[in-house]
Image (cartoon, rainbow, N blue to C red; front, side):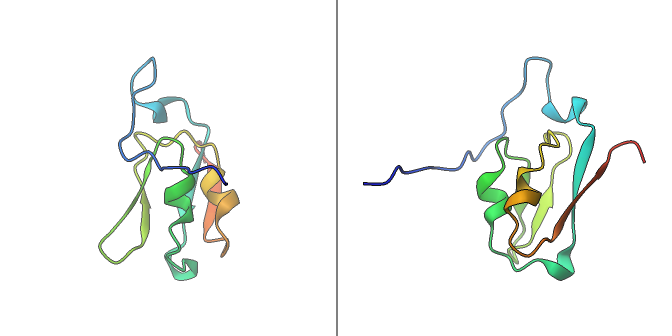
Length: 86
């Protein structure tokens, strides 16, 4: 029998506070490419991704660590990781 995985529904604070403080890259969601599958929300370890009433994802940058898991898991490549400093 397979392992059951439940998504985290509330962000947790890192040891220094909100976890977006040390990010060096950030995800940018391209809504026109999004198929509303929700995988970015499911795989976000913080979670910094939330879905609006229409099912589109958005990023809460105060909690986003910039890990890139959301971009890696996105089947439609609707998430680009860009430098935090550009």
